Image (cartoon, rainbow, N blue to C red):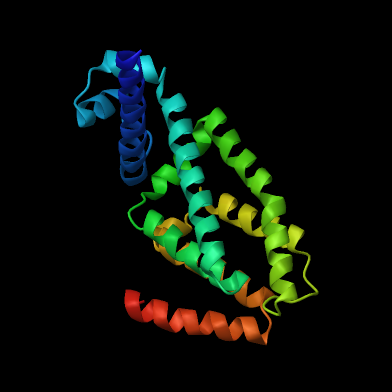
Length: 214
């Protein structure tokens, strides 16, 4: 029983290492350019061991994105407990996203669509998070941070669809993903903020751009 428990623990640890290592490789190099052979080699394990845990690359990619989503949910819950208003939570979440996206190859985000089960997971996560996001914005209205004449259900969908529709466009030959991401995010936040919210946002931007020399 003890040996069995250790084996299960070791297997779980290996699974986590595979997922975290693969996610970094996929994000920086793109999905297509990273093979299962590459993953096995990076981890110093046999292909047989890798395929015993993940039957194919799409299954591995699904696990990678699920793990990343779960980590972000945990992070946002922790931020929510220590923040004074919803805009502060959003801006901390933005900074976290920037850290994640800074080394991300745009091909990674574009190539996800080529894996039906993976893309369905992404869409499913968005739909599942939608109601929580809308309620979150409504709380910002109560705090005087966001305008009370905005249909946040519609706007939240539009912002997401805007990101999604740009993935295959030539805009990324002219501008980096970070520039596009920042432009969409802050244009949206300015548009839905009250004077109080706008002041908080501008204060954040001054500090953020100073730190990042933007």
